[in-house]
Amino acid sequence: MALAAGLTAGITPVAVVVEPDTAALATLFPIITTVQLHRPADSGLVATLHALGFDVFARVNAAQPTTTADYALMDAGDGSGQTLDWHHLPSANQPLMLAGGLDADNVQDAITCAHPAIVDASSRLETNGRKDAAKVQAFVAAVRETERNFSDVKR
Ligand SMILES: O=C(O)c1ccccc1NCC(=O)[C@H](O)[C@H](O)COP(=O)(O)O
Image 1 (cartoon, helix red, strand yellow):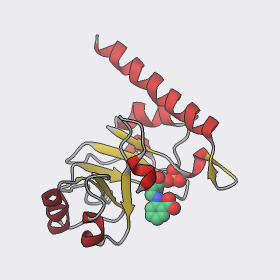
Image 2 (image 1 turned 45 degrees about the vertical axis):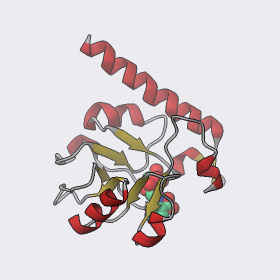
Image 3 (image 1 turned 45 degrees about the horizontal axis):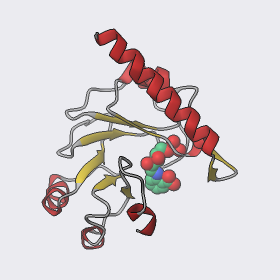
Image 4 (image 1 turned 90 degrees about the vertical axis):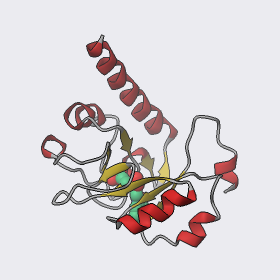
């Protein structure tokens, strides 16, 4: 919580959970205002989190890519570094959050193919199990460059 409270404005801390305890999550608000449910969630849980004030990212299955959460998360694993076939993702009913094996070398292809609103990367931005600042910076730069390319196309 101290880390989250000390973040620079514009950086949104996210509580990533597999087995959510809504009472515990409620204690995080409003220092943390976004919850990432790493398993498909029923609408009751999402409604509870919305009622508490949280924005919600929820994982969806390729077979049933629908959710009442604010963003539909598609991921290949749980921080495993495995990639999805982002050339053939199903359409979700909510804006897409794409995860799974993303890094500076592949995120531009992933964004161009899948048009996610949010990208999430973890293990490939690490060296010896710790986040590597150079890999994170290269990843953010690749995402920003792709964003610029998209906005150039729109003009
Ligand atoms: O990262 C973990 O160790 C983890 C463990 C259990 C559930 C979820 C977990 N991570 C969730 C994430 O949001 C990761 O960033 C996402 O799975 C992408 O990871 P990666 O494929 O390593 O980029």
